[in-house]
Length: 606
Image 1 (cartoon, rainbow, N blue to C red):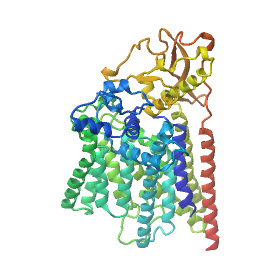
Image 2: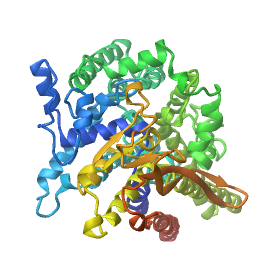
Image 3: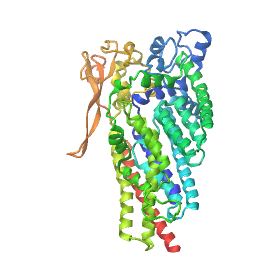
Image 4: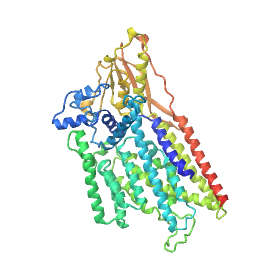
């Protein structure tokens, strides 16, 4: 009962801690974040009117006047969409961003403006949208945990060799192991296409454990068609396993694949074609870019073994050692006459093999990133939870005097320590990640600088209409978002523009017309530094501290203010990281202590 309540809360709190302490975003998630901004504030109306009129308007009259997008509109034919000016390498779908922005829009209608005017608080909108995704991801993992509990409840009714393994313990251990790791809680609120894919593949695993392989295939096909074409590899390995085990028939698999694929394309293509202003199926173009043109290696090449030797150990940390335990019968010979090989536990083997096969197949692609194998992590955690529950079973048996007490209990404590140490390592990763968004922090500091500037005497106060801020590529890629820009322009009627790595958006030498710059350059002629934001974090193991270097500078044009009114530096705001770390440690200690207390109470009562 304790694990049914506290473990879901711990998983939610770890995701919320990552959301609060790292509120900004990097370039990988910028497309969906900027898309949710545009869909929330502008909707699809401008794109629809442009499409129906067969021409792009050059007017900005349909755009919310609280944000100056005229420069962007000129570059995008009058449409107030960030993706048309900064299209990126390949197109991405707007499906996920549309759903999240729609929920946020409904919330803005439900909450009275007299209580809280959501559209007037852009950073609150950004937080709400990310929190929506966090809740959806959290619910997916709860559903998988419930499916694991149901799966082992059925197994327990048939097999008696693990009578001490309670399905409730596997439910709790799955959530606890997932919460202890870094990547799933951290990325559960980040608007990566990989996060949307992870969410749906988690539901697919839940259906598989529920004994509905047809629905598993539907989820995987749907994910492949809309969010991540690389899930096709997982669909292949899982689908092949289902066919071999006769969970699906070939005809049934073909019908599911074709029908679901067509429905997925019909969902994504019309919306994306409307917003991209051309006929497009995004994931097909992504597949062509990676598989046919093989251009993904332009972003770096890793050795074949990188996922196994580097990514998985980093993603799972010490909980990796719990996975092999799920494939061995630790209690000795089982009493099942039908199974001659008593050393091997096949309970989860047919789930694990296709998931690991997905990682192996992905290893053939030269360009590798940790986020590419996110869909494999929930299944690995399910196996780790089963392994830890076996150690739990041995400890319970030893506590009742039916086994090697000291060894069994000691091994179980070691298993719990892998979770605790993994949590500590994840908190360290989180602390490092806090320094990874200097662009977003620089924009916050610039807003504080403007606030300090607005307090000077009236005769020397600047005219905000003449202020023009330029954001370079490094700042734009490390945390600057349209929500952040709007939060500044809502307070001060200034102009803002930014560079991009596209040729047409490359602004290497900003003209003197800019009054302020957010730039990675160490110095710019005609400007002085107002503030410097640290970044590029690394762990100094010798001195046991986090080391950073100057990353983004805030420049102000010389002579914009008299020297006596020039300020340097801004007041740092206390973040919630250390409070969150202390709270997380307390909660973990509490759950482990309460679980042990209730287990002992139940044992004495029996």
